[in-house]
Image (cartoon, rainbow, N blue to C red; front, side, top):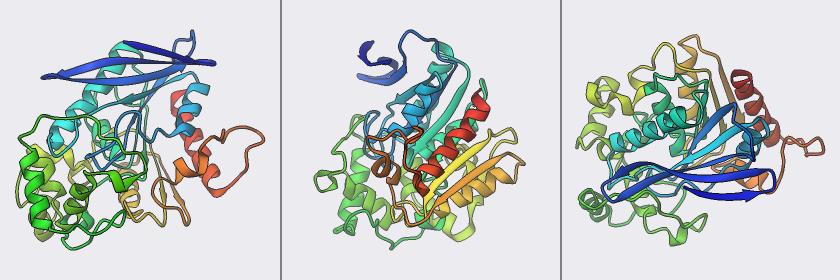
Length: 328
């Protein structure tokens, strides 16, 4: 366990799981000398392929959590393609279970981009305790949607994948390598040697195949729909295969001009939760792209009385208010 203190809050790091020689850890930020009343667990983004627990932290959400005396928890998880989707999800679940056993049973499950996928998939599986609420920030919420099963559409975050067959083979070869839980180049994607894997997984439409190890699954989903998903892989496609009836109240926020993860991903998720009769808040932020919350709120306290009111801050503050209703 490691400690660090900054003003009125502290950060501690704990190992919550060991997989072979790999130690998976989580960072816990809390008010100094205070027992948290709840915990907000935030899974990081990176298309499940890169990133890390302390990369692209949404400071607006961390500040909101600490202000309310919630613990803000950032877990690591194994990355694909070295790990399978089920292994990644098991890590996310293990982190949530560790928090419920060691910090508090009152948990909110959140995540950004790929972390949004993990937030929804984890909340669908976590039965004891059931989460208080769920938050997906421009999440890759349903990997059975056409974007992920229809070949030919490059990832707009970077250049189209070249030598597609070769990159797909590299992805397959990495499955035999030791798992990693971090790959960080920050916002400098020109240095990101794993970005071509993400580009190829989009362009070849093999996300379902890579996550499940079931070659051809994406093609079968494209041809006949979600019924092609085997029952033992359903946990990786909870929106397509059916969320539990007691799924928690859910907030989603997404920029309408997101070219990395289309806003339809949040719209589909909101519709699925709404059909259960569960309360949903969907905030579409006009004109904003992927990562807008990080760019637009950097170094700011969006809840401060003197804070500028913009479409971004108003959307994010409404998310905070929504989550607070279920944690207080």
